[in-house]
Length: 499
Image (cartoon, rainbow, N blue to C red; front, side, top):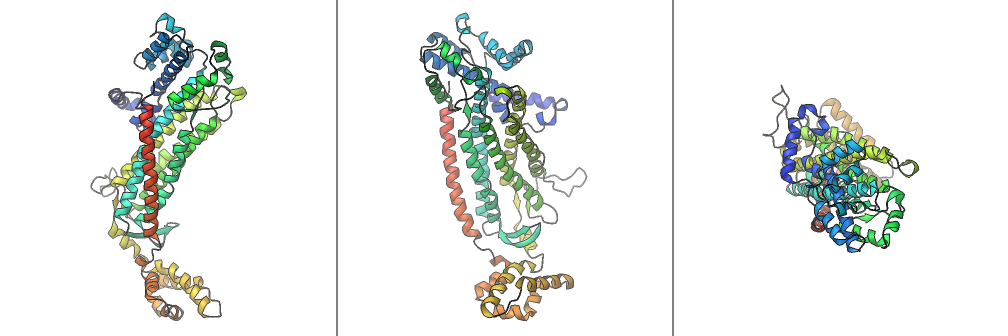
């Protein structure tokens, strides 16, 4: 469902946060993503917990376990505008318990009769875990997945624009063999779309619980005539979550860590893309820039510079912090004697931070993919930088096979060509000039068909299946992205019907 905080209020609150810039830590100001506040920050999660109370009351009313007029009153009044987070926080400060403070806050909006039916048979983490799962699922379907689709579709589009743009493929930061811009984008997408699909699957697997104190359903058996399984079935169907079977007091940590791990895996490829772009932007390469060249400002004194600030932030602070926060989620696999409070404080931090950091990464990456400058002329210039040395790989593999097919001796083609490359460097001669003077190589090339000879001696011809790979894979990814878009539409339509 849409952000738990109305847009106008969110804009106002975000403005106030900016006004407090000098008084807040950087993570709460400079790197805070406004859209995420409405899903995973304290006020939003509090709102999701109120939704749990409303839905639970509705189900109990339908089943005759709560007077219908009471259930209707709770559904009508236990809402964010009547049960504000700030008042719940005041209650928490007074009685030293957050969920009991929320219940006390909710009760103030109800009639005396309805006050008795706000929280029957539940325990704190029925609300907390279920609300967090709802929040993370909404965040995924309404922010993270749509922005990820945008990024992927943008890269596919940029790849189609540059399917024939030849660039240098590098290993160990050195020229290796020619490739294309489209093929490079395919590499990024090949490491992004699969974890995006995995993230969607983990999102759908998020769980809630309604089994009460230590998970036995004892309170529901005591209070109600309806089988707890039926209460749970109706409840989880209405909120759109799966039920975590046979818990103690908390939802199993696996479901959260699996979700967060998939999210971090997806962001890892975003970090790689960002790090690549900042390398392509360095003076010695200059092939791609993260923005249009007339927009980007350099350093405080070097007016000639174009600093890749967005990609550095993605692959630096955000990625570093994201990975460290994921480790914290693994600590929550351990709960002493079914549950202690260590995970409570832990979750408040990493659930918020991981969602905030990851969305910031994909939002910035989508902007970079859309605005980035791709300099075809510089790519062509760099391809010729080594004076033909980039032809060494096709030459040596062809030569080795030719020797095997046409002689009865062994000649180490790799060593033969390596000596030529060293000579080209030492004497400052173009590599292909030395190739033209080499008797063995010329005998081998004499037998080569023209198209094979072109592949060996003309880097722009040594592209293998770059074009075919991009077209095949991009069509496959587009279908997967289309299916994801449909899933998002269906999810949002369903989520908007929650009580």
